[in-house]
Amino acid sequence: MTKHLSLFFLVSALAACVHSPEAVGPSQQPTIHEHATTFQSVSEKVAELVKAHGHDQVLVVLDIDNTLLTSDVDLGGDVWYQWQRGKLDVKPTPEQKVACLFQDAIGLLYELGPMDLTESTVPAQVSQWQEQGLTVFALTSRSPKYRSATERELSVHGLDFTVSALTDKQGELPVYDGALDRPYSYINGVMMTTGMDKGKMLQFILNKTGKHYPAIVFVDDSEKNITHINQAYLDSNTEMHLFHYTRIENERIKNQGTVLTQAQADQMATEWQDINALLDRVFPERAARQEAGCVAGE
Image 1 (spheres, rainbow, N blue to C red):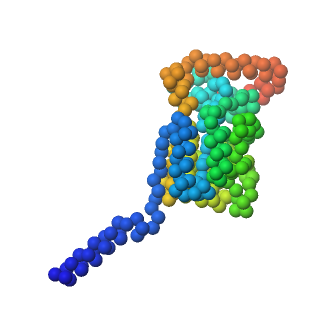
Image 2: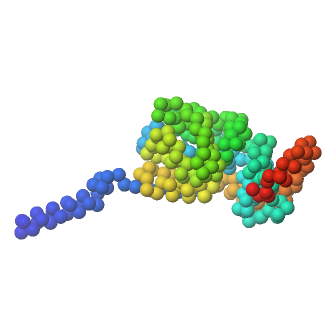
Image 3: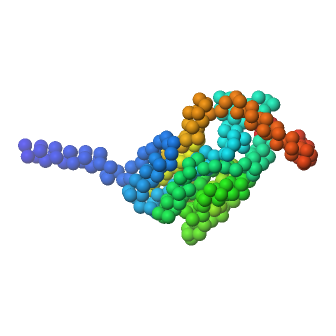
């Protein structure tokens, strides 16, 4: 009887070891996907992670368009871009499709158009994280060609990522300017990716700088980007918290029932025609170059 009891306790102990997380080493961390309409919920999660891991062990990665900043008017903003790319319920007519969208129009409108904060408290929140010693940087789908206008608008609103950016192995703020599938750059704590997969680009820059963080918070208004980050870290033991930030979209739907009305789309088309009429009059060679080198919507 004693022999049987000893065998029972031995088997039970082995079973407990098999099912114990400590017995199998570090387990894969779950990816938490949340919706946010304010940075307050992001701030609360960051505070929780800092308490658990420490200030220097938490990375905060922030998108720019419709996350930190939003266009002052529709033309040239994220809604305009989504409309031009056919991503919204209202579609542009063939006549409304913009020629030289990537080669000319986007960059021109970035240079001309001021931006607003998505929330007035955003600069103070970012500064608080920076003062606490967190690593915070921006990861945008914009092309490096648009860096000047992008950094100008960040600076206007008091957003400076140089003080909290990823540093290299020597602790210096690096400058990376190259190409993978498309051009990218990482300068002044702002990574520009020309629309490449943000999950892969986040892994790329962390590998390049030799950094690892037990916890990462990622905030972006694009569900596609959230999905790409999630896919990239499925097999990771990093604690990932992904916030799909929908404040701008939600406000538009609340105020008018949809992200973009037909009247707003028509107004953007008219405004673009007005701008081009002026530019063609002042710079006639510009129109000739567009006809020679650009296709509508490309």
